[in-house]
Length: 242
Length: 242
Figure 1 (cartoon, each protein chain N blue to C red):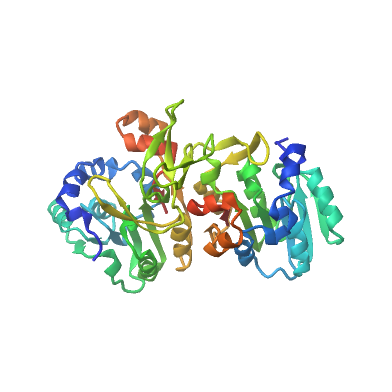
Figure 2: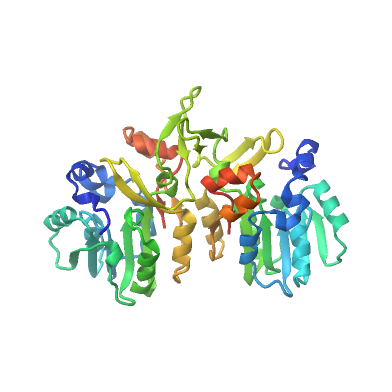
């Protein structure tokens, strides 16, 4: 069983304060670009991998999806999701994404927001997704940018003269687990290169149709001046949306 | 007219000493992976963009290509290429890649090794390539990894405790020219994100079939211990092969 950070009290109490949990999709700065990649949801059968509080699952149903199977590893997240949902056509399910079983050609859309970088065996998961999608189906997903997951000791340093921040990048080619202190100590993420993500998708009979390295716009930075981490990210790069 | 570094004496005298110039394709550490992406060259009409000394153009002909149009901006490079070539079916041509004119559906293969990061208007060039390729045609290219072209002041710094090197990454999202001191002072390259390269290709009716972030293997590092820059790169990442 992999680490389930969401059920750790120290992580969870900070996690639920994030804008993307309090405000839902609109609180996630990358949502407009992720949304633009979605197909018309009307009548679709959807799989939501790492559904958290179920914000996307409800969005999908409100926008015409026929059925949503929503999966998360966290009991706490799913409890909260159930409380916020009254819809028999969203089926929440507790599972480790690595143990997922998918029937062939069942889904029109597989959606996953910022979950894949917690999954150790991504090749197996992507293969299952490729099988689980209908021939015309679509995977829309975001991951934390590998530039951010790469270093063993992630940090920015400031240039002494200019004050500009640089990200200390190393170990990009060394794939595997990384321990970070994001929201709580010793959170484990899985680092993989961009090439590995893309080629794993291509090798499983999927085509790449879009690839965004998201960062906030100047306007978003003005609207949310306190988003320190996003401000940093603008200087470098941020989450990848496939 | 963009900068033509190859005809600058200070650059050229160092450039021609690189393994990839002295030994040709076998001197380029990424060649095995680039070669593995090539189609069977037999009977193909090939366009070689940024052909340099013509190593690839001759390789293509030796492996059955019917005709190679080989383009470079550098007079010096082309002079040397002509000297090394006796083959009427390789046509060398001096041109700025940005001024290239291609007829529709003329080429089976467009090849380009480490040239695109000198081209300012990549969207225009990729569009022309998309038009110039036959419907079954292929673009095989490598670029310097955007992680390396991003910073305004590119450098590694060593960790005081461990001695491990980290790359100082900044300005990744700020596309545009960068001035570096690679082989000579004030060499201008064009920085673009990985997303821009990939999406420019996808928007021009090409499919992505492979994407490699090249780095030397452990065995290569043992064989070539003096490849300092490649040793650094192994810790981070290196050229992209599309």
